[in-house]
Length: 212
Length: 319
Image 1 (spheres, each protein chain N blue to C red):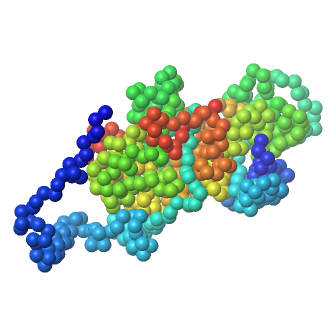
Image 2: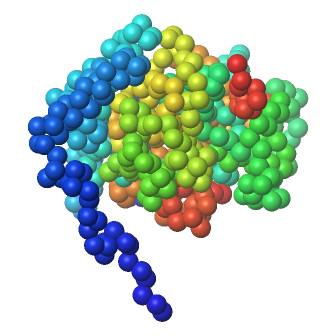
Image 3: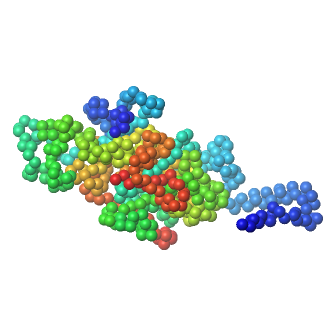
């Protein structure tokens, strides 16, 4: 991890008030202005003067009619945490293809606080920061994503850019990339993964087809 | 080794011209008259030059234009856009930024061949839609078994969904060579390499000889064989003089890294259109940039490296 990272992507604590305001959207509206850390050298000092802002894209919508999970799982009854075949949540289990042989719901979803995820060490992670959860296993991808090599960024190559999250392209329950589509949530365009492959745009015309 | 014979013009003794054809034999007044007459004939022929104004016809090379002349030239392009499309446009000639050399990385392990980049480019850069159809990006479909093998590449692929089993996709566009064969081939200096690495074309100076097209080993240059077809409603009004301004018939055009966007700090249209994030763009001179990180940590290769064109466009495998 690069030392400058901590002030380029907002930390969890910096994100919390923003989340509360619902400001994390595609575009500069959600730009957070993280405090520059002490600069160890001239280059970092220059960077701190003109910080390239990085804005988190809006994460895709939750499955309809399911969220908030705490609507059913209120955390009061005792939870059986043994890995087993579930009789419920067919819509997720039917597509589940994420090392399905070894993993199941409660590896990522928290048994007590259902509206959050948890790391292997038990720390809670909100859904909007699921990349921290993904990065536990896919550390190389997390590193590349932070550097801007893995995944997509839009905006300005030398200024404010919006970075897409893991879940904008990968369905966490079936993460192998198939395709993505745009959808509108609360009047804002959000990119979300699909389970179908993309249809390509029309092929170019052959020279003989171009004669008027 | 025998010495190379020198060119005859250097060593031959001056030819004795017939007395009436000698320089001093011509009446100076007559010479002046001939010059004026020739200029007059040239002006008369202007009437047949597609309605070019005198200033347009005698315009200096882009690099030699004074700020005032450049301003008038841009205004003229805006006026002709208005006449041709009935829409207001902004034509700029934004120069290269200090300390910037553009680099482009394309991740072959991610590209799925959906061609969204192709159509985003067409839209952004005002390319001719049909008859002739011009597309600056060409996506080649190749066999995984063969690797990068142009003899088995297919760019008219048209399956129901992509990617196809056993295939990979290889988008090709202008590689913005540091040693550009097209620039060397141009007889009128209508194309040149800018400081930030973008190879540009002045469509007013292009005579349509297509020498650059035959010189380009990447097939990146495209010719307007007929009047470009571009619906006024689809015109992109943000234009650059050396980039996406509408072209006339008979000139060559090519990718300019979206000069009208990149020189204003924005990502190119293809970068923003790519659904898999396979396209990376940035400043090669900035050690913190994404493209530099690609160069330093990934397996990078150059297309047709053996030709020593030294492109600023790199292919890489992130996995």
